[in-house]
Length: 148
Image (tube, rainbow, N blue to C red):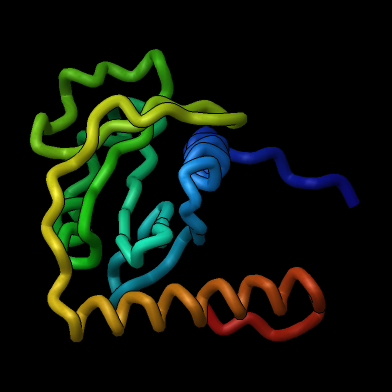
């Protein structure tokens, strides 16, 4: 059975994850912090920092996204990940920016830091860990039941 080709946003996420690994961050994709929100990439840094990266593959994809501000409550820094053809002037200046493709990325602008309160940080790290463990289990045993 052939693999399904990755969609543009998934390619961006892959490049972002590869790049952040070079900065000693570990990542998960498509994490749901609360019902109704799905983070494209969440990264956990070596000092416990939590970043959210929203991947946008087109102008329309960005303009139709009305949920992104809700992600700010779930991270210490927020970034957009776009490709080199994306009109970056559309992106808010007070957010981070990563240029990426399917192979790598580059942090162009750091988003401002807004540290999570300790109770929220604990909840996010637990969600991150469970999400990563479930994904690892599914990779080891593709026939296992997924509970996402």
